[in-house]
Length: 140
Image (cartoon, rainbow, N blue to C red; front, side, top):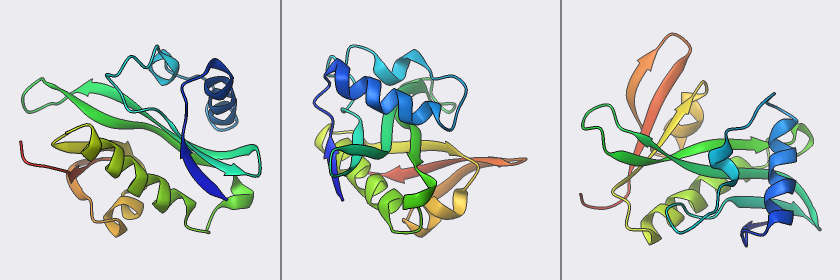
């Protein structure tokens, strides 16, 4: 298994989109937009040449000041490959991508805050069955 940044090719983005569609009925167009430098490229977990996991980014307004922060839009690992640390490795790579992009923080809206807490993230807000998580990356 290896984790790589997508090259942004249509072929790779379609593979990632199809993977996400295994879990979710619809995918935001932000997952496969033009990748013109506003977002880090998506991350792929490859088993030989098969995409078995992935992570994509988006920009979304922050509640406290309205600026557009960098968010993990989707993170998915096929069930057969779960419990092996690939999700945690994807999050660490996402943090590296955010750091490389000079982002002050990385955010996630999730129903599994425990996963992010184990990775050193903090709860920004919690409501019902979802939490907004944050990882401070650099100075603002």
